[in-house]
Image 1 (cartoon, rainbow, N blue to C red):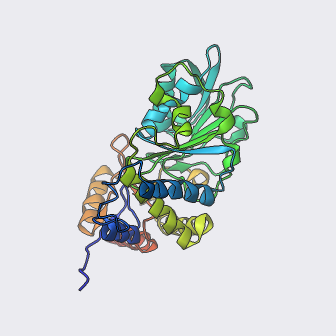
Image 2 (cartoon, helix red, strand yellow):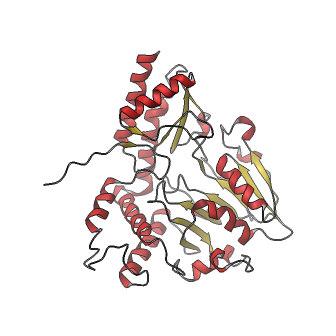
Length: 365
């Protein structure tokens, strides 16, 4: 008899919800993976069985994101935070500058790390407006000789998201897509490098995906430690050392789940529908709920808002928790409320939360 499983409405910002069907499959395969008599966590990363898992995950990502053959797909460790350092170490050339578009805490951290390795500056910033918006593409100022231009595609803390990316010409465009990769179709050809921690839309924590153009690889600094060279991992199919094998297995299963749903167009449509449930409540609440991001910069992944008072917010969060909604508190740096509606969060969860918001307003107006 199949056991009844209690599942909460998981709106955590990361690690975040995983597709239930993927968790069920992982549970079924946990002890004996494909007749090996071992868990996938016990397989040698040099074994043929694991190699199939590894390569299938790479191929699935290429297929879903339409990644051209002119790019390498890497599975690294250290999260996006390590990429903040690896990128300038590899690509910030002596005597040159790199430009950063500032849209929130994560771009600030990336900028701070890059300053340790060379000359960097702000190509644009919305900090003065408390990061409520994404800069207008026409307002981005950088130099044609820059080593690269860096942006953060979605800002988890402030709830903003790029709708259209700048065309940086010959300046390599680098993007931290940790919190919205795989949530909608993108043109990979616009970017020289994309990186993303897996724990939002791709799988469990522990895997970092890097999509890097091969010609950029050829320009990288060679006078850095072996493990911090992208070329090391590209030459060894991300198997130079032991990779996070279970995380890559899970990532591959999440990609299969996306494919079964209909790919990125279908996922994007679902994400728009989920976010609309909640934004519609905010917009029709007559100020009871106040969204942080301006409408044209709103994120589909992280919906941020405040209530009329801190006391009312605390009451709202306590009530939400009692109703089974998890992860609704805003980031500790800005407070308020945040709903993270990543790919694996069901439509039903967002609909239920919107109904809870309406009910709470009715009872507390």
